[in-house]
Amino acid sequence: GGARQPGGRLGARSGAMRSKKPFESAASELVPEIEHPLEQLRLLEEKAQELGRAGDVDAVVECRMKQLALHKVLVHLYYFPVRDLVLAQAALAEAYADGGYSRQAQDHLAKAKEACFGGVHDDGQAQRLQVDLLIAEGSVQLAVDELDLARRSLEQAARIGFQVFGEYTPRGARIQQLSGLLAQRQKRLEDAANAFQMAARIHESLDGAEHEETLRWRLRAAEALYLAQKHSEALEEQRRAIQDLQTSGVLPAILIDALSQMARWLEGEGREHDSSALESLKSAEQVADQELDKEDPKVVEIKRDIALLQLKMGNTDIALEYLQEVEYLERRLHGSQSTNVARTLKALGTVHMVRRNMEDSERCFQMALRIFEAAFPPNKDIIRDIRAKLNSILAASNA
Image (cartoon, rainbow, N blue to C red; front, side, top):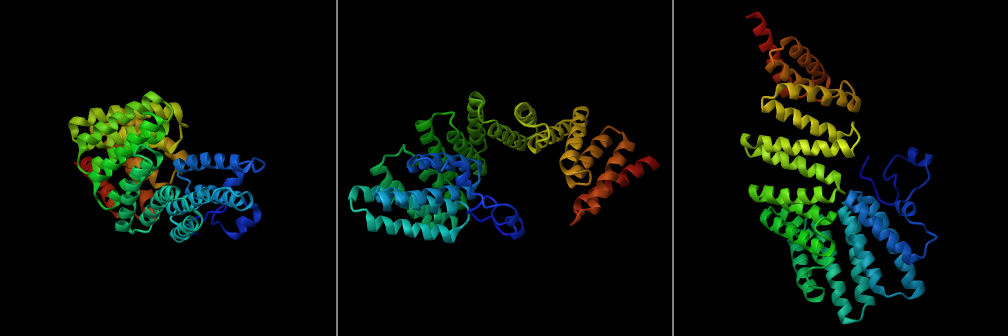
């Protein structure tokens, strides 16, 4: 099937599936419709922010659609100011852009501009709304790869926004976030890092150093610095963010990812950093064991990374112990004939070979080979490598 369309939690499933289950909207699930419209709007805003952080872009669209409908009722039946209706149209345009629905995003952006020019007559209010419309416009242009236009819109939003609202505001943070994403797309990686760092500073001034948004954008800044080949600065930024995550103790999933990323970067810096990389992975494992289910894929991935790093460092006993646990968990997660299991069997074969346990090494390689040969499409490079290892075992036994 195609991409999930907003408007129902089931999205673009088959007609047969839809006929078995009634329409469900994220907005109706999350907001009691008996509440006053203003209370519904407040709850929807909270849920839209929460769902956005979770990456459920279609559910955010549904929340924004519901908000827009409520604002239309308030404006047309109860004569509320048009300003909030314009903002709701712009927010829905941004949500559609984030979800990849470019045509709908452009349509709602046009409607927001039309509502603003037709219904707002106060110059000061029009200027404030212009900032929000320019932010939405930059977001939509970024989504449809009109990168030069997006840069122009965001620079204009930043200039007017600074005059009207000041710099350390939620709008200022949003402008910096979008500017960073744009710079990243244009391969201006140092500019991206600077924008993400500014977004983090704004969030820190508004919400505190340990707030989720502050930490998320600091981690994005670290990533941009690393991609810009500023490795020492990236590692220092990552280290500071990890310390704040550990202090707050409320975002374990983000902390686990940050520690795992730190380990990968340290390992990439050379063998002299392997011990520090292992320490970072062990910290990630400790948090994962405390906060996640034992069979969570993230737990398995961390244990696999520890095993491979232990093997690289020559600690074959520990590597073997970890890989045996990973094999067991992957069989439960993916099935005994999965390529995940085959990769672990290949790693186990390598460990046994290093330990001169050729019988177990051959057994692991043979099982891995059967799975890889049955997979479609077959990974020819891995198959070739396993056969070479089996041939070397055979040659050693005949020597």
